[in-house]
Image (cartoon, rainbow, N blue to C red; front, side, top):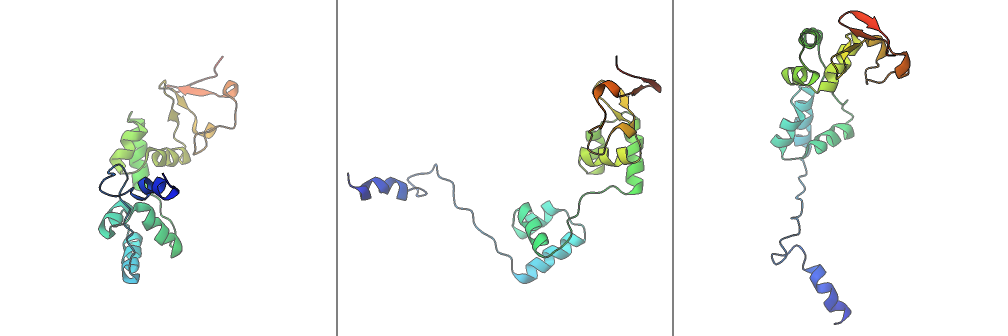
Length: 159
């Protein structure tokens, strides 16, 4: 077998005789007017997933176009009315995930908004931790031994 013959199987990859290889990704280049339409849709608040489907591109490509055109990245945010609704629903016992589903945002977005307004977060055991102990990302500057937890309005420290 010569060197050329040993390369033939490698050169055949992607052919019909080797179905295990993935098809090549087709690149979709947007024309300048399409980029303008994409940007207008993004600025109008159309969901990135919808824009990606409409233009036949990946979600990341939408973000790449926005970055290249210096369009500020938008994040799902809760307005004052939505934050109030999130607070009411969470305090009534709904989980962050359920509140987020209801409002169309990630549970982390709900959590950050609630911590920002001082709502105590429940632990997995159903206890609540005072909001001043938690940063919006859920970490605490205090050690576990010094934390004070609020259970049904009564404060106590773990022993």
